[in-house]
Length: 385
Image (cartoon, rainbow, N blue to C red):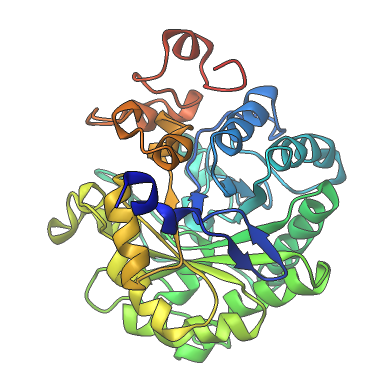
């Protein structure tokens, strides 16, 4: 078996809803923060995502774009909240689709993680319940309990943002229900201690997520793709479990979700001793993806340290997932798909730095020490590279 045939499972088409991605390599969401401080798409952002499509990713999902100012976490995070955002979004969608990839926006409300963090208590930080938590090491804050009218507004904001994305020409959206952001906060029995119809029982805790998906589907056409980043396991005693995720996933599919990611942990639970170093472990989310794969009949994307194409192919061949999500491997080398397809593994640029410079530079626009010098100096790797 030659290398090119060995990796062939990565390059078979992937049906998603009514559309088809040319292969099973998905550019997974990764915050690079190339937007401007007002939340608009920039030229650097357009080039960044278009370059990953040009490199051969079959589906390009953006980093999480906020559905409102109240749901924005980072100072250069893109917003999808008004007609004014559509022209920039349209340029971004067109640039990605020009290379044959599906173009998808991840939508988020940061909930209790909303920023700016240096003035955390100067605005309403919305969460299902006013549960204190450690925002940064040694700094405990308390968000506000989201009111019923704010819940209704947030649901509408997700739907409106999806409608704007479709108008801009994107193929779909990926609703962010993981990592401790607002939707996953409702799922968690630890973060959600409400006693009304939005909390308590399993059915009540999943209600917000289902209402968001219903609103997204209501405001978009039948051919528009809707995916979901699902918190697969909170990884803490008494929290949301992978068993809960397997029970919930079919409900999402019934409401119109057409692909799923399995995402373990929240930003807080990653700090627990048992979870330290989780995101550095090879294939750390594959087991959870395999559980979801058994629960639903839509594509499940596995991600988490799958940059070795041998590992990625094994995941597909075992049936643990239908597609492979790559974030940092495509950040450091957008030509990963093309090089792997050609069997030129020695040419693949890897990311050995620890801690990663891309994470340390997120607030101002992520860069990689292993890019060509011109890209490092420019601050992004785009069309010129």
